Figure 1 (cartoon, protein in one colour):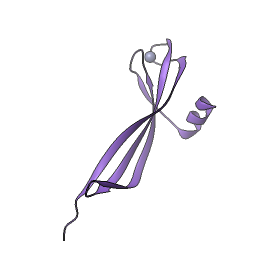
Figure 2 (spheres, rainbow, N blue to C red; figure 1 turned 180 degrees about the horizontal axis):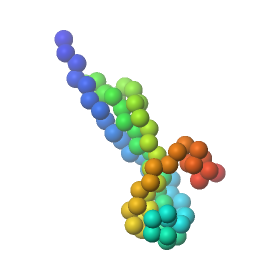
Figure 3 (cartoon, rainbow, N blue to C red; figure 1 turned 45 degrees about the horizontal axis):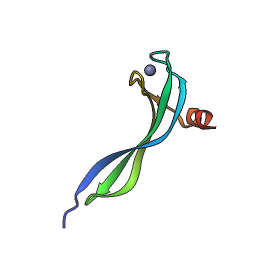
Figure 4 (spheres, rainbow, N blue to C red; figure 1 turned 90 degrees about the vertical axis):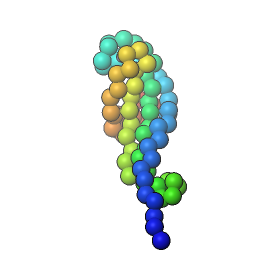
Length: 76
Ligand SMILES: [Zn+2]
């Protein structure tokens, strides 16, 4: 009996909002992306090992990692 383990990373676009970018300084749409890394066994994702939230500027492509608290402040 053997097991096939792997890590799968999926990205989900959560929302887009307009804000001034901290990289280019432009007022441009910022994409909120949720990146989840899961442990998979036989290609079936089982456990989420890491969740990362990213904010990506659609103007310059600048990516910054944001915390859950910052995300709540942005979406409400
Ligand atoms: Zn930018």
